[in-house]
Image (cartoon, rainbow, N blue to C red; front, side, top):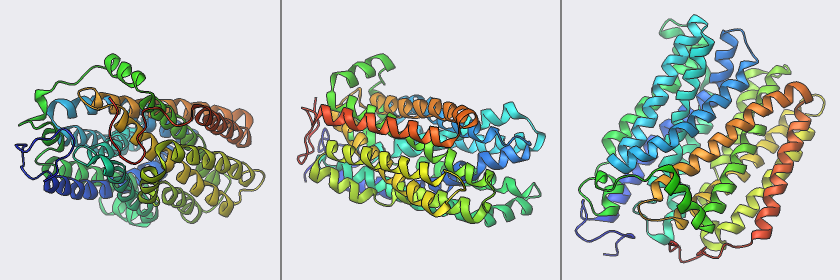
Length: 432
């Protein structure tokens, strides 16, 4: 039997293909549950909580706190995975998100803004776990199918993300059933799905894919590297470093445009459930629905070509969002813009993830993966905070133009760089 890269025939679990298949099924179930939780917390959680404490201006801050939380949790989760296995790192991050949802309910009930901020940071653990899952899918994948494996995980996440914003009525009834403010049912739903995802990952990821890929009895026999060596390893690989830059830019544009614009549809008086849910669902469709196709394109045409296409879509989407928000909100046009925004983000994420996986293999790989996720989310969090200030002082149009400028800069950078020297388009073999 042909073995995955770095796996010997005496590997734990024996049949690597069977372990990979089981891993993908478990990841699919966990990501489906987590997708609902992510959508519920991102689409409604911060806005609902801000409404309950009487501070609508907190909505953007709480969203930025969630993104920052994803960045803060990414490296510790990667280190846990390196020391104790993927199932521990992923389930621990989901567990933090579960705790965050519970704290958010308490914070909103007692009107504690500080506690609400802490809860939002912990909720970011859900996004950190969901992002790490795409790398888990590549541990045992054959080199030629790594991109398709990680894109499959993203596509499953999208099913939950699309469903999440549209079960608002169910969440309201959940709040009524347990005897709390009905709007808090959104956060209860989010916490429940994160808890279920944590349990699925903890129980189901056996044998651990990372242990099997190393041919070890336990993942802990190879200690994780620290941040500085990981950064050096990333810098030493042109393809990995390019991937990190692409991920940071795409995530920042997504947060700057894709988070602020939907909230403005509500503040401008559009129907909450009808328009807000439609806009968020449309963005989720763009973010995840085409992941499998994009993975196939990355294998056929190369990672850089896909990243270029993604940057171009982000640029066009920013222009569409600008015109849609000029004057009265045109929800249908905004939805089209956000679908394209999500599609551009997805192309960039698939391409950049493949670059990171291909560019760095061996002991530093997990730390580089964690650093990549930390960097993209922390840069997006900073962008989200600045976006809130920009909207208050200058309006959304200026903000959208700034996002378009960032997309244009990324496009120019990628065009000047060309295909990285160590990119393997079709063979999929990693660079060293």
